[in-house]
Image (tube, rainbow, N blue to C red; front, side, top):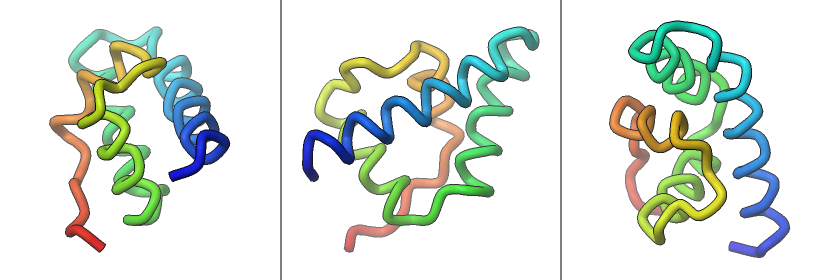
Length: 76
């Protein structure tokens, strides 16, 4: 995955987290996961998990918390 693609996914995931940040913590994490599950195609979720598995640098703590609720796609 290129740095630009990685940076864009981090940016988008963090923007989603910022939107849900004002909600109670458990609802916020679920909101982030629901949004990503609903609107991100499997390729994007796969890239997100590759980044998380590599340490998740730059991702909001809320995105990292939501990761357990995000559907992990099958390997390509």
